[in-house]
Image 1: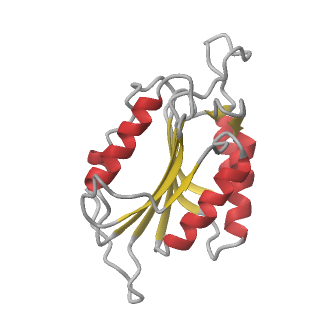
Image 2: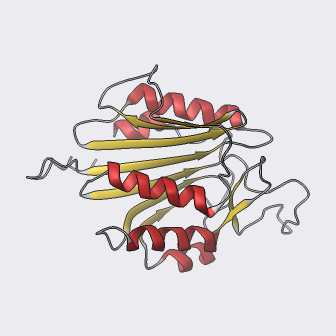
Length: 209
């Protein structure tokens, strides 16, 4: 386990983590609600500033998670319907998250149980390798080039040159095209090359470490 980085002399946390849960999907949206519950149950810490945007069939919400378990935390913002497969919504979230997470190091987590839209053409292995998330309300998908463009635009408004860590909690999304598109804006990329359980990552375990 790496050493915990202390707050700097300006009082900033060592890490800021922005979690984008794109759960407005035909199936699997319950798993994204459970991911949100896990995140609120573990909370942030003195060395971790944590913000979350969760989108589901019934609407979306944003949270600034305090440094303690907060299972009944009220959202910081609520939205009726948003397009989590579109660039404008992701860009707005990342810009907002950067203003909250004034931290030494910054991570972005993308979670989606469903990246291939119904009826879309897929590869021979049954996957759509260039899609990262799907929004059922709009029918849009977030593609690799979309993500890279969003991060470049958000970083151009901030003092940072790169996102320190990008982690994608979705099936079949670790591929060469993704790494190539992100090489100038992301230092470390974590994503699966295979399927992952519908429940996704254990956020309690990840965030507590």
